[in-house]
Length: 388
Picture 1 (tube, rainbow, N blue to C red):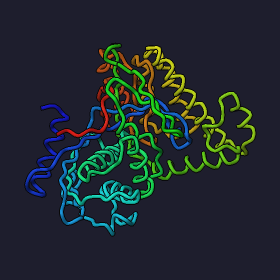
Picture 2 (tube, rainbow, N blue to C red; picture 1 turned 180 degrees about the horizontal axis):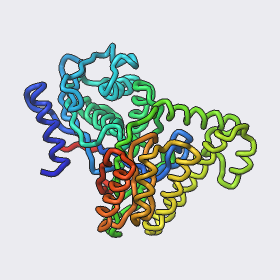
Picture 3 (cartoon, rainbow, N blue to C red; picture 1 turned 45 degrees about the vertical axis):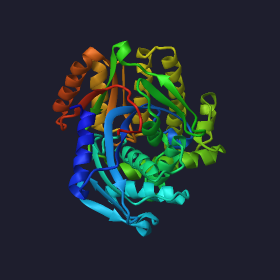
């Protein structure tokens, strides 16, 4: 049995055990990794994520009582809530808030959402920066849209799922995660303009080039991640206001030095420099991939990491160690991916060298006394879909 089939089987088994009978269907959404473009999304900028083969699966059926019950492998006890709890952000908390948030966002948009019984299984690791929350939101959204026969085209799903996370859960994320897990395509990265929501599928056929992306789970505990993420976002918003632009995306690379000179403090200047140069790195990466020059994006990945480390200050020692070790072992480029303060590193490697690079990172961790990292090689996968 494949890993994806195993997750689907676990979701079905959970549904049978908790609710009896069979689900009406199973819907799957992937995790995602961001190839490049970190903390640019909420600055109306550019990002280049791709969907992972790791999946969250929701087995679901309509509940005639108009309420929602959800069971997850994360917590053996199902969580139940009705319209009153769903309509008031904060009433449902913990992991189930991502489910309630989707119900809330659908209802707030004027849709009649059917009550449902849901069972969730996943192999997207929680807390590693691979967007397990967006995977839950997307799979639940797909299930409820179909179970309720809702008139909601898929190109509107990312914004609705983002609203669930921002306004119900209270996490100030941009739209990248939801777009990647919903709209991903095998063999491609998703070039997303976070202001217009225009997307372009950029060829990223690692297998044909003899390459792979090695994802390294740093196993570093997230250190103040939520508060620090929010602080970075507020800093960017204040800087944009001071510069008289709608968002930092509007500061052109050629105008960067003049813009920095108008800001009062060194920290804010560093934050702005990261965002503006990171947007340019995304655009440069896209141009290289359009030309089929996958290996040549490596230095851009590494420069992105240096900017996150030095200007945005969101890396931690485990993350920096993984990047340094991967590069020393022959990776073409390596960078932290995700919001920061823990999570994962990605390294662009020759496929036949992935094990050696992973071993080098593990050895560097052992030398530093860190908890051993997790590693896996990945190729771009498809987005949210119904399995059966």
